[in-house]
Amino acid sequence: MGEKNRLSRRGLLKRGVAAGGAVALSQAPSSLVGGAQAPAVITGRRFRGWVALGNGPGRTTLQELTLKPIGGRQVVVRTEATNLCYSNAGAVLGLPGSGPPPATPVQQQRRMNDLAVIQGHGGVGVVEAVGPEVRRVRVGDRVCVSGTPQCGSCYQCLRGRADVCQFLSRIGADDLIAVAEMRDGTPVYENSHIGGLAELMVTFEEWVVPVFTKATAADLGMVCSCVTVAGLGATVAPTWGALQAGSTVAVVGCGPLGLSAVHGARLGGASRIIGIDPVRMRREAALKLGATHVLDPNVEGAGVVDKVRALSMEGGPGDRYWAGGRDSGGRRSGSGADLVVEAAGVDQVKPKVEAGPDPSGVLPMQQAYQMCATGGHVVTTSLVRGNISLPGTLFSIGGITHHGGQAGGANPMRDIPRFVELLDKGQFNAKVLATRIIPLADMLGAYEEVAYRTTITAIMVI
Ligand SMILES: [Zn+2]
Ligand SMILES: [Zn+2]
Image (cartoon, rainbow, N blue to C red; front, top):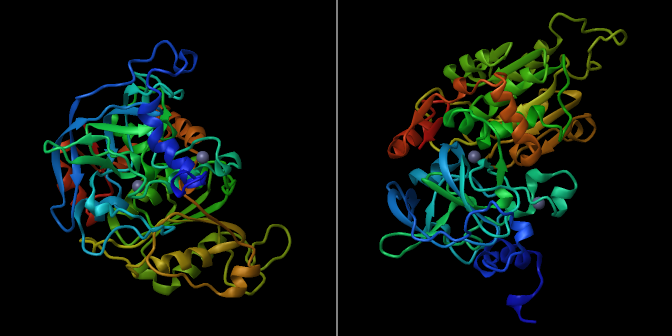
């Protein structure tokens, strides 16, 4: 068996993702397809999309595109809304030396910047067409195209870690397949098999979550965004089981992800919620979403850890071992937060608002660990540049449980419909987060605002 055909996991996933396409268009058993499905192939459909190609500023332009035939497990979604995620700002704007550091660098044969790629790694919309093997959604369904897929049958999905579904590791340059063509015939690919910054998204069923709601596109786009799913995931998804009613939660970094964690902490019954961010506008938003205290790390300096520890003891005895006294045994000051959600991360570009104390994001991540209570939980969600360093003994026997993963541990098919329910029942306030709502044509300008942090986030509505 040749190298090309060996039964590697990578080969299987690639064939499953990419080649499953056109082969079985007319052969799929109708019992699996369902009688209500539309024809699997739609060709020649024209649509507009923001396509990045090459390097540097100006790499992303609005292009008229022609959809290629679909099949297999592919799903065509007419985009209603897409959140402009900060982690995609570097790729969209061509910022120097930017882009999120890869979590697991895998050598790719192709270079992403040599491909024409529709940017955006999430969105909401309505299913326009499905390949004959698609079972999860039907034409006409409203869906969240989740930033993290969930196949339901890989090793990670089966042990309850759909946030790191193995399909997620197949979004490199070599894994992408062309879904459209530019006017000159250049093949067009999509960021993460999603490409949310376009009038159509062509994805695979592993990435779609049906949501049955009449919410507005902007509100739904916000609650289903990668950042809100991660913030709510870190707090109210059952993956970690780390949030208890009446507890103290600290959120380090109050961008849209951290603010969603503040909101989730409130929804999950936390009694004391401490939001930490250098940007005044974000601290004010944190207070609106349920924070009981906000701290400016530029004011607190290295004392921010002790401040959170002191706040966690506020109003209770700090020097008793019995009857609920929350002394930490004299080894550290105060008690600490029962749950810390870290959501600061690296600055892709110097903010035009208040900058934090460490543009690499390393310091806030270390502080997040150190402000956690003995027996508490730390959920890390951000991308940082560099290595973190912690006191070894604290790390070893400090009694702190660290949870690292994608999307705050959210399991898309299980959790996103519940998050939409929170929106529909008025429990989730999308408006405080979605501070900018813009049409397709204004995407680039809005992305600059996101990159320079002059808005909390922006939602593109089509
Ligand atoms: Zn994102
Ligand atoms: Zn999976």
